[in-house]
Length: 333
Image (tube, rainbow, N blue to C red; front, side, top):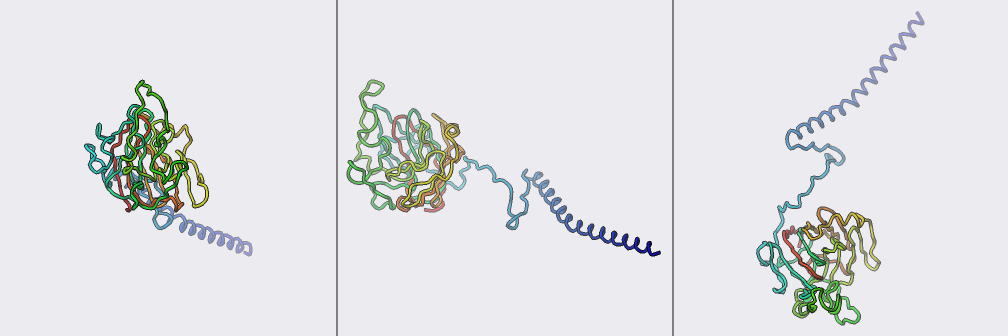
């Protein structure tokens, strides 16, 4: 009888342990099972509806873990069109070197009739934080760029900007870019045998000149998408494929790379249309080329940083330039 009692006690203890373990398992796994069932049900409902699974509840009280939908470059909802595709209404230029051809803003620079470095700018006014989309196409060795948050160099009421003095030139620097100053570039006769032409009079062009941030466009495929700065002395700040930060009083720093040269070469469409996008938000500038992030600048140097400015385009070197589908979404002035 004593042995039987001991055996019965052990059996009773074992039964109690089994019950406790089962209860714990029920408490732990039932909510998980219900959560999984609910998620599966939501995914099924989503597939039957819009074709996308419902986002899972998670950290932060219902935050989603799903990927963002791919942005459509052709979706211009909320954007303002800056070019009507017919004429240059809403744009200011010298009235001689810029025109409309094949539904695009057009300029051509040749050896026999060079444009020098000239500009055209939008009459929409100042834009601070914004999203800007542009399509551009070039031929031959034409070099161009999208000016933004830029100043008109003859406007003394323009937003603050540095006016560096270059040795031997006297006075403040104008908005002459690479190859824009008299005496630079090739000399002698043109390949056609005709005399090399003379660029437009600098005094005539001065009131259209721009300085400031530029999304670089280069049909020779050396610089497309980089961050270049006209007329400030800084020149190329973020080369294609670079993420760069500037701070006052110290050299710029490379924070990281986005792509190597071989990869970058596959992103640019030489002699064809390129989808270009600039997003300026505070001190950060993002340059996109055909759906790829091609350069980033975080500009923390108060001597050069531009909070707002004009939007325009530049041309230099030789070749034809076409610009169309210009859309702007302002976040702030």
